[in-house]
Image 1: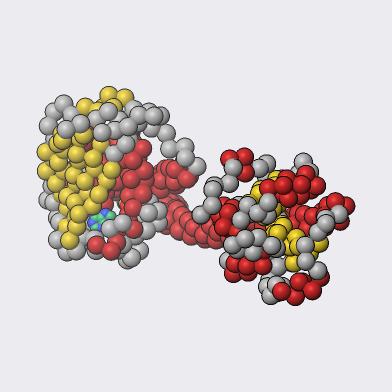
Image 2: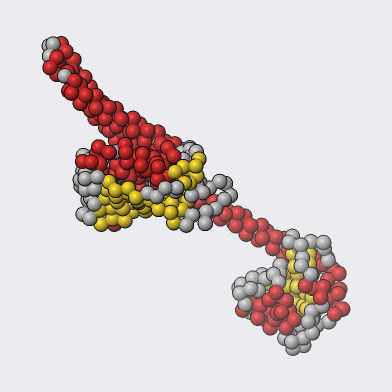
Length: 414
Ligand SMILES: Nc1ncnc2c1ncn2[C@@H]1O[C@H](COP(=O)(O)OP(=O)(O)OP(=O)(O)O)[C@@H](O)[C@H]1O
Ligand SMILES: [Mg+2]
């Protein structure tokens, strides 16, 4: 390899400058040619031999190469053939500088790939400059074209991405509309049944009154009526509350107002409220030590316990229920266990989604909102819920709640 090209050849050019490679074994020719073609928007790199030129061609892109034909070692034509053989330099236009006659023009074979031209010595400065100008202009046009193509390709890619995004939004919208329609259908059905029952009861009582049938209103009958009315009204109120919660969750407005809460005491209250239905299934064991106090929203945790207990009663096949609370490190762990119909493994994730019901009987259950709301409340407290179950053998829901309560912005639970 020849002596390395002098350092100034490697100075990084501003992006807009086009590079020209001059190859000549005689320094005075290089200097003269460079002086002839020098322009602010050109960067000229010089090489004293074919080898030196090849090295530069490996490192840089060139708009044009001007090769002296007569050089010791590798001559201009041989260098040009090597250039045409390499992918990187194949398309660089070449201007041969020759002292020979025009018959030499046929000596070079590689005309097919890139532009080739000749300059004959003695060089005419004007002819040299105009030839260089033509090639540089062509080079710039090619660059501009490539940039436009690139921009076109980019905008096409952007359009495609936008289109994909649009399609996805459309799918989401369709899904949202379907969910809303399902919700409306189910909600109106669920609201209508207790209302219909209430209306029928009212009509029946009116008829008894019209006919003066006061035997229908003895104290114990009235008591049962009141209890049944209260149950229907409670059911309606619960449904409406659930629907409101769903709306709040969907719009990210489920509010949690934490305060010091004794979870054991809270569970005892809930179990007390369910005393009667629990008696019907042979009771409920409640293992809850005193003093498990956390920073929680009591109303919301009552909702969690109520939903889990309702499910244990509803899907518990009339068997007793067991509730346990314990402290594990910085968390309280609540489990609600029944011995009922159980949940298949493939349903155990789905049941935490809104309107998802695993039983499919339509008769015993509600809207399929309970566990979804429960999970949202538990997660809003920084906790988690999971289910373990065996079809036919029973189900345990396990809720883990950090005693510290919900995260504040920027805080993390261990
Ligand atoms: N303890 C359980 N044992 C067996 N299956 C259960 C139990 N708890 C929930 N499931 C199943 O998970 C489904 C979803 O429960 P979820 O509480 O969300 O809804 P739901 O009880 O049907 O109605 P809602 O709670 O809205 O009145 C239920 O329909 C039922 O199929
Ligand atoms: Mg439920």
